Length: 114
Image (cartoon, rainbow, N blue to C red):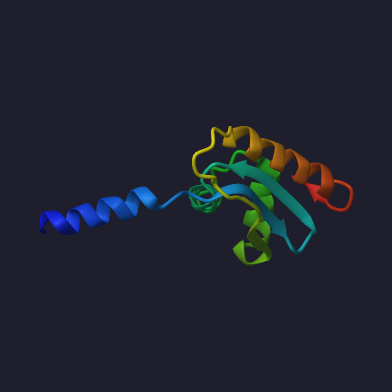
């Protein structure tokens, strides 16, 4: 691998920003929802799917429903995505947390939350 190609790969990697925001997992069979905020939504989605499939998820109710109903009755979604802004000092962790709390509050009026 030549040095020029390595530089291009490194530059592309550094430009790639992780997806930040809120993750929801909707149980379509029983109309329940799980809400979580994350600084890296893709990683969180993969982690949750892995732990649910291996039977080790920390939310016992969601884990039991996952085992009983199967993966096909759950929909993963990213309803809120927080875009990174260049050259600004922003506490994204607080923004993600606030967005997650706001989403839980909004949804709790219409749907059961895990």
